[in-house]
Structures are given as C-alpha cells and as structure tokens.
Image 1: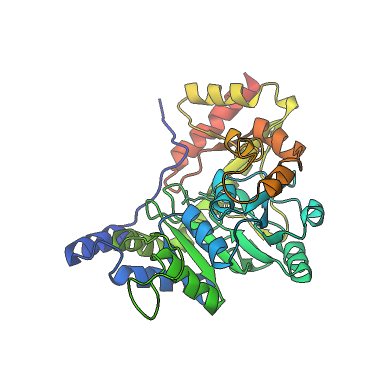
Image 2: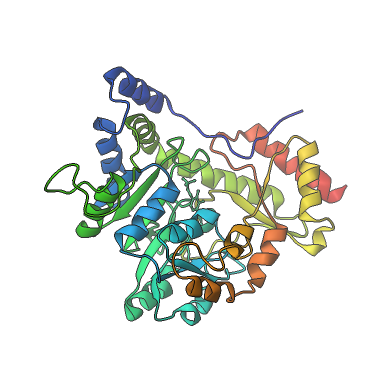
Length: 383
Ligand SMILES: *Cc1c(COP(=O)(O)O)cnc(C)c1O
C-alpha cells in the first residue's frame, strides 16, 4: 500500500553542499558567512531593508513584539484561529492576547470584527496568513494607522504569498517567518524577523543576542534572549532560498491537481482564494460539510487506513486549557486577560476546528502520491 506523509520537505543538492561547507569551515555556531548570506537573500527576495535570523518562528514573533516595546498591561489583537505560538509570543512579553474570530472563507482574521476589539490598552494587531492565504491587510493597515497601532504579520505559513501584489511579511511594522520542517522554506528549526525600520531592526539584533550594550560587551541595559540561529541552519536556509520559485510552483501544481481531482466531491469544501490573494497553499486545507455524510474524524480515519496521513485544523486559542488557566495571569495584566477571555465565543473558529483537515501538502509530494490521495477520497466519498 502507498504511504503518503502529510508533509515531507525537499532538501536540494545546493543546501546539502552549503551545510557541508559550513561544517568543514568549523563555523558551526551563530557566527559564519551563511547567517549574513541567508539574511541578505531573504531580504532581497522580499524587498525589505532588514531580515534577521532567529531560532524559530515563535522566537521571531517574540522578538518582533519585544522590539516594539510591548509588555505587561498591553493588549495585542490576535486571530483566535491560529497556531498557538502567535498567542504565546504575546504572553511571553507579559501582554494579553485579545482574540478575534476568523473569516469563514479564508480562515484569516475577520476584519469586520477588528475595530470592536480595540481598547486604550491595544498596542498592536497580529494578522496571521493562514495556510498560505493572506489576511485582508488593507483594512487592518488603515485601522492601525488611524489608531496608531503597530502591525506584526505572522507570515510563518506564507513564504511567497501575496496580498494585492505585495508579499506577505513586508506590510507590517515588523513581521515574522518560521522555518520549521514543514514550512515552505525550512532550516530544520528557525525563524526570521523582517522590517524596513532601522531602529526596530537594531533592537531585534540586540535582543536576540543577549542585549549586550553597544558601548561595552558584557554590560546589559535590558533583558535579552539567546535566539541566535546557527550557521548550519542558515546554510540549509540559503540553499533552500535558491529554490523558492520552484517550491512555490510545486505548491501551485499541488493545488491545481487537488482542485481538478476533488472539485466534484459533494460536501468537501476546497480552499477559497480571494481575487486579491496569491495563495501559496502551505497546506491544502479542506472542510468536511454535513452533506459529505461522514464526520471529519471518520474521514481522516478512513484516509489513514488507506495509508494517507492528514492533520486536523488548529483549534480556538481562547479555548485552550493553557490560555484559560491564565486567569489570573502569572504574567502581565490579569485584568486584560480576563477581558480577552470574555470576548468569545468564536463560532467560526469553533466550527472549522471540528470540520477542517489538511491533505498531504509537502514539497516532496509525487504525482503517484497525489493521485492516490484523490483516488482514496473518491472511494471514501462514493463508498
Ligand atoms: C509554525 C508557526 C509558528 C511558529 O513557528 P515555529 O518555527 O514552529 O516556532 C507561528 N505561527 C504560525 C501561524 C505557524 O504556522
């Protein structure tokens, strides 16, 4: 029986070569030429002034918020439907996440509910480009400008994705990417902060490296972190960046193949791409509707028996036990957090969390594997 993993990365020959070169150079830690080369390649690709490596996407988000001076007593608006790291990063600073439900079509932050969430404590909005589809940025950016708030794009799932021709991760005040093993570009573990703001970039560089005083090493005027990526990881990332165009074409091919193969299946809602978005289909995310005649969990189990691995959607951040347990908050403003928890319910998030799954979407997916997934879905739906 064929086995189709939910995600398998592609490591091009160049990336292997660079990693070997890094090993042979002896520069295995966080100095070495690949760090700078990877940062430069990433900044050039996005057309931003600064790209700064970090140990993970979570760390990149934490650095972004910290560099904005966000801390205890502040609030950051976060979509309820996201990977938990978006909310964690806010909590690490001592600030409170304030959740907003998501749009039922794109699963990104529902901009019609945004303004009602702004309080005098709000400092930033964190749109998340879910599964490779951009959030509706113009209304977010306009509101942020009007209310003097920062915007932190969580572009962890959106390398190469676009909003009205602008690349994701270039529109916010400061933005974060992830290079986890299942992301479009991977360094194993890793992340990147991007910004056009020189002062923010300088603070990020300082904070990720223990906040040494610029005047004197081993003097620390603020509390920093060790969020330094290694040269080995950067070598892998640089090797991957040379192939980003090819990776993005592979994702388009995958989406087209799934669309052609699955569009006539009743009760399976395929991804919606807005006219203003270039969707990079980080994951090919589908919803199981009532008319499918089977629950999402039953469908996933059927796929599993046919050798096909899938994943559930994320679930509501506000409903997570770890977030609920934060009242009263050990960090930051307990009052702010209690307030944020009252801001549910989040009916769209709760609904899609129960119906959503993603099909195998890795860059290593073969024609044979994708044909097997499509055939399996047909046999389950018509069986
Ligand atoms: C992957 C991901 C992160 C976190 O990235 P890590 O590199 O795993 O820390 C944050 N936000 C979203 C939306 C993600 O998908």
